Structures are given as structure tokens and as C-alpha cells.
Image 1: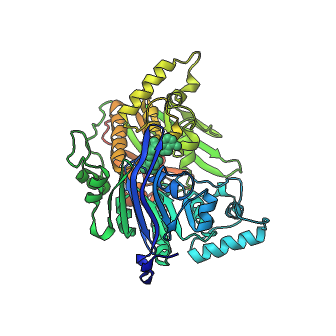
Image 2: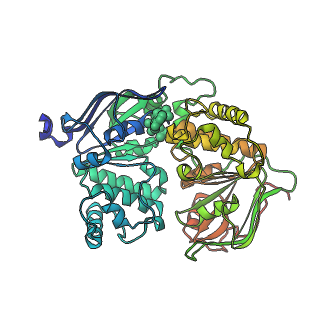
Image 3: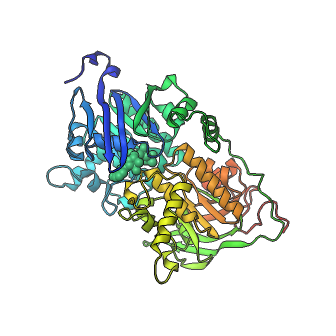
Length: 526
Ligand SMILES: Nc1ncnc2c1ncn2[C@@H]1O[C@H](COP(=O)(O)OP(=O)(O)OP(=O)(O)O)[C@@H](O)[C@H]1O
């Protein structure tokens, strides 16, 4: 079955995709896409939002069939009927949106889709065994919905490994992770490949790609435009390939150097912001706000916070510190158990899980536009207006979609994110709360989103943004609140101080702590 090159393991081609094509209605999602994955390697698959990366890997995992082209697995023709079939051949995939059953335990999820009767002890033992072998620790009896996102991802990976996969496809795995978790995951990816397996890593982080991958392939509008050894290329080169032939930047376009500069941008305070001359106008505020989850655990404890007109307030926290709940209290998605929330009727909100919380996937885009502010409207809906608004949003935010009538499901992950952000910004709400706003976006879209947030701030919107990437918080925020174990404190926007406050190691009386009392914005004379 194997190719003739198996003497040197790294020369054995596990998966070979030749000139694949796939169309959805009017959209040619793939057109001449090729990829060769060698055993023992990590292969980074790069490309702009909507370039066709996920579609290509769905062909391999049996979720879609190609219109044309050839797929080979260990040198033999590959026809995949279903994900179960792919798994039985040794091909696994972890999606951008997890497919675990939240109310079931880790062991139950891992056993799901296997054969024979469910044996709790055997399933738990299997999770422990696979986890130990891979160095991915997991409690088999934990319910998935009680796990932080990093552990949910380990569960997805262990689920694939329990089926003895040799090729693991990871679709933007680090997008949901905190930087330390991302480093751990990439180190694991390297070890898994070194053991003779292979990984296809879809990522928007060029630095990660170059750090961990042996080979890289760049897709542009459904075509492979570059394949090389990672050691022979640079971020600027890859960025150019991702932007296609437009290497000379058009006015307002982003060039590769800007991209690299953006990726390496040192966290800096935005000292160009105009200092307000009058007393700042509070748009959002929390006073002694406490919130408890269904199990009685205090997630937000006596929080005090003020957000003024025309500023970006950054929230910095490690996973599970209560930031998820804090953002929902600020945007009116949760009601406090104690304390007072003051907010305008209209608060734009971009939740991190756009699939679950922000979109009706099977509804057309114009109906998804109408979701915004639906609770505030009475009476008839002006559909012609929503169609026009959807068209405008598609062009303004560079959403790649066939039009306002396309269902949200037909958009690539990054384009869904751009659409949701554009929708929440439309109508210029007085306040905007965003959670991981650039998750899943390519570098060009990330810069565009950061620009859009700054522009909203400059128009007077009170913006609250949380990002699991601390550098992004520091780069965008005028003021920073750090959260640790449900406690909210304003901290000077300095990397070390914020980092320590996130870990709960910053004492209240430390000079960097601004305590939990309100401050006027920096530079204010009030
Ligand atoms: N089920 C579908 N129906 C219609 N169009 C689709 C469908 N799935 C994907 N597409 C289209 O195919 C193109 C490629 O999408 P794909 O999800 O593969 O991109 P991607 O490179 O993974 O993007 P991202 O980085 O944003 O996740 C996009 O234009 C998308 O709108």
C-alpha cells in the first residue's frame, strides 16, 4: 500500500490531494487545490477567510465529495463516504466549532460513535490511557459543559486519537485558546507528528505556522498558490501569497509588510486619543454587581465598572475568570442577582460563539440583519430595508457572500464573524460589547476589525472588548480591567501589571492596581 519512499519516513506521502474542485451553487469554493502531506510532518494550510481551507479538509473527512480531482491515502485511491469511514481509515478532524455533546461526560463523548455496548469503566480507562499516552490530561467523568474551552478541545483531540488516527486535521485550533494553552497544543502537535503521524493545521497565525510546521500550503480563492518547506519561507512571503497577485497594495489595501508589522506590533498605549475636555459621560456601568451560575457558584463578585463615551475598555482574564458573564451583564444578556447595571437600551453585542449565539444559520443574511434590535422593534418589519442593509454591510465589511439572500451557513467562519461584527456596529449603538472580535479572522480582516472598533470609539461609542489574546487587549484598549476568580479590578495598561492581575497575584495596594473604584479616563481633567 505504501509508496516506494518509505525507507525515509518523512518522504512517505500519507495524503495526496491533486487538483480538487468543489462548487456550491454559484461559488467555486475550490478550483485546482492540491496538497501533499508527508508522514512525520505538520503541514500548515493557510489562506484568507473564504479561501477554501475548511472545504478542502471536509472533502478529506468525508463531509463533502469533490466535483473533480484525485485524492490518495497511502498511495491508494481515497473515497470517503462519511466521517465514520474517514476515522476507520485513520483520518480525524477537529472542527472550528466543537461537536461534543455538552451534557455528556468526557468518557461518554469519546465513546460516542464507537462500536458495541457502552461500558463506563472501560470508556474512562480508554480516555485515561489515550490521554496519558498523548500527554493530554482530562477527567473522564467531567461533564463537557463544565470544562473550559481548552479542555473541551483536548476532549475533541482525545476522541479522535481513541480511534487511532494517523492524520489529524485541526481547523484553527489555537483560535479558542489562551496563549499558554496554544503553546502547549502546538508542542503536542509537534510530538504527535514526530511519532510518525501527520497533522494538517489550518491557521491564520503565520508565526505559529512557521514555528511548528514542516511544510506550508497557501490557498487563494480555491487554488493552491504556494507549497514549500516552512524553513524556506518567511511571514512576508506567505502573507503575499495569501493576498494573491495583489502584492502591490491598492490604496486602503493592506500589504504584506503592514501585516507582519501588525502581527508583531508591540503592545502600546494609544496616546493619539484625544483627551476629553469635559466630564466624561458614563454609558455603561456596574455597581456592586454579583452573579451566580445555576450551581450557585459566584462568577462575578461585587463588580464595579464604568465605561465612558468614546473609549475602548479592555477586559483581560484567563479562561473561566468570569469575563464571559461580565460581558453578558454589560450587554443585558444576563440579569444581576445583586447590584445595579446601567446601560442604554441598545447595546451591540458580538459573542465569541457566533454559530450558537449570533446567527440563524439557515436563515438568509438579511433576516440575520433583522435579528439586531429585534426586541426593541414593534410592528411590521421592512424587509426591503433589511435587504439593503445586508447588501451595504456585505460591501462595507468585505463579507464574502453571494448576496443578502445567502444563508449564514454558506459563509466561511471568518466571513460569518465579519458579518456579525458589521451588523452589531450598524446603527451606531451608544455601546458595543465584543468578545474575541478577531477570532478566526485572517490578518487583513483582523486589521479591519481593529480599525472598525477604533472608528466606533472615535464616533463616541463606549466599547468593551475582551480578547483571550492579551496583546490585542493592550493594543486596543484605552483602559483595562482585569478579572480573576470573579473579581474585577482596573489596572494600569501595562503588560506585567495586567498579567499579574489576571493571575490574581497583584495586591490591591500595589501601585499598578487602580482598585475597584471608578477612575476618569486617562487625560481627563475631570
Ligand atoms: N455549505 C456551503 N454552501 C455554500 N457556500 C459554501 C458552503 N461552504 C463553504 N462555502 C463557500 O466556499 C468558500 C470557501 O469557504 P471555506 O469555509 O472553505 O473557507 P475557509 O478558507 O475555511 O475560510 P475561514 O478562514 O473564514 O474559515 C466561501 O466562499 C464559502 O462562502
